[in-house]
Length: 144
Image 1 (cartoon, rainbow, N blue to C red):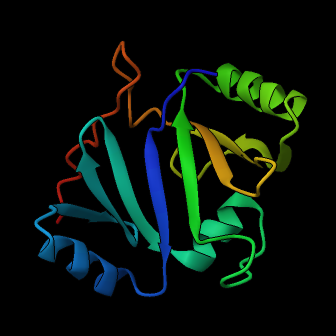
Image 2: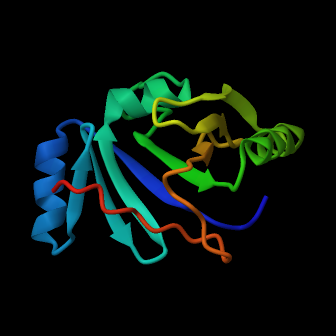
């Protein structure tokens, strides 16, 4: 697995309120399908409803204990690489919480938790192509 974080998804109670907060900090967000994306250098920060983040990762949202409302995403170049990284993570002691599957956005992804319970999503998203260095750039969704 390459040493990289592609997206940091923050589970929030109210997406509109959270977006307003970050925009007050000077960030410029784009909303698509009840999700807000902020370009953050070579990475992105994403706001999504907390319950949806938990469901997508295959974990229980236990409030302040356990799942912390955040998932780290590692984007890869192909569906086969998703399977390879998940297998590598399982071999390293990760618990696979969501086996790799087709996604609603036309990609392929699965999730695991590290030994401390931190959620990682491994995803191939054809809408977020990777640069040679592994960086992603959030596309212009044509909405704001």
